Image 1 (tube, one colour):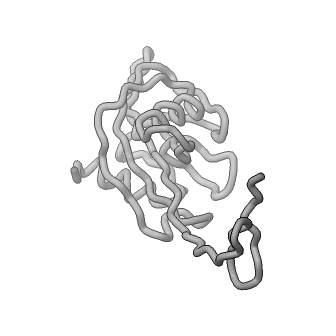
Image 2 (cartoon, one colour):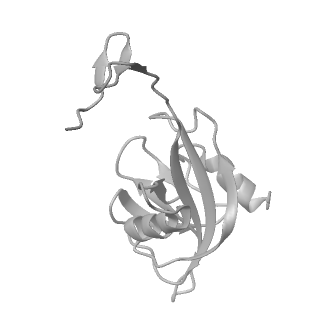
Length: 157
């Protein structure tokens, strides 16, 4: 019978032998997807979502990578969950890893560039999903997504 690791005042303790076990704290892997979108009515630009949960603001669609999931799989899933868009991934853009990029915890985000051809619709963690260009970005942008978008629009590959 396997017992759970017990947390004692000094640290974690192995339930089998009682040996102290070092606890590792690692950043959480996330993905964000810059979706280059064209709609039937002629709108063209990148898709941002207005967040339902804190921290508030507009954001590039994305989220946490599930255990057993590839980065690419997570990107396609998160895009669909938040924008209802079926995306085609074009390439990886950059990885952003500043420890303070997400106030909730340390994350490392792999950014993908993708395309879609439909009207985005908000779902899951999004209140709104809209198309923006380089010159009409919303004022309040969450996380480090303004920097990511500046790098994208200035083609800092």
